[in-house]
Image (cartoon, rainbow, N blue to C red; front, side, top):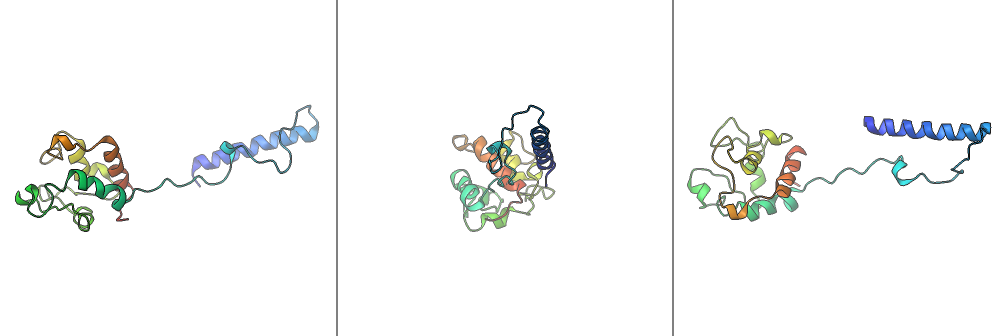
Length: 162
């Protein structure tokens, strides 16, 4: 259980005990809750829903399809320039995750759980990445902040192929 959940539950139980004790002792307190009453929604003790994870197939591959595959395909500019990274459906995940860059073999293309050390993130978010230039080259198809956020979340969630 997360610390904030523990504190929330402790606070809730303490508040209910104070009200109940006041009612029992007849301290003139009005008892706002009766047996069987439901807790207000913000004080519900059920576990919070896990945030939905980013789907590689539904969220990330479409970003590649929109911004990257003009150059990152067989015969594309990147491929003809000695960068064998293809970002087409069916092979992009395998060629990205846990693989080192051909431009700098000290850099992972995608390091699961660590977007700050993933060249994919650095190339789409920085004007001067550690190697090459910002992607995509075509300024008309700049990756949006929302798309970058999806990629960051996907990488930090472990860069799974789902």
